[in-house]
Length: 154
Ligand code: ZN
Image (cartoon, rainbow, N blue to C red; front, side, top):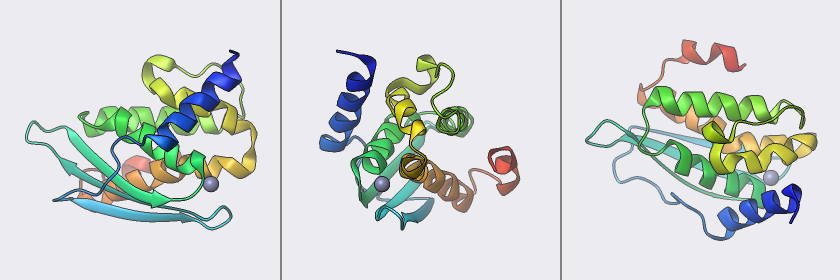
């Protein structure tokens, strides 16, 4: 199996068996993002566990890329600190803007490296980024992140 089909398998697996799907009982912040060009919608909610780790849940509909990306995202950030989650988020955004150039860091990105191939298709980049943008807004709304700290992502 070549890398491209392996990546497609990972995306399809997350689409068919989403992780972290569902909204939170007590969210601190929530954000609803839409990608009108593709018809994708995602609501991402954030909260904190008793131990201080992030709890992230989502609900949405749309293409396999947008939904699988949200599933991978919750898997990668749940239980981590806001700072750790932000490092992963920035690495994912950088990978999506690299247009398929460079080697994504699998230690940081885990299953999210599967979206490296998507970065070659400009129309689908928004699909892949939708959940991660909603995560940022939910974190800002919850007060876990200050709006200034995201300037470098713009
Ligand atoms: Zn889409």
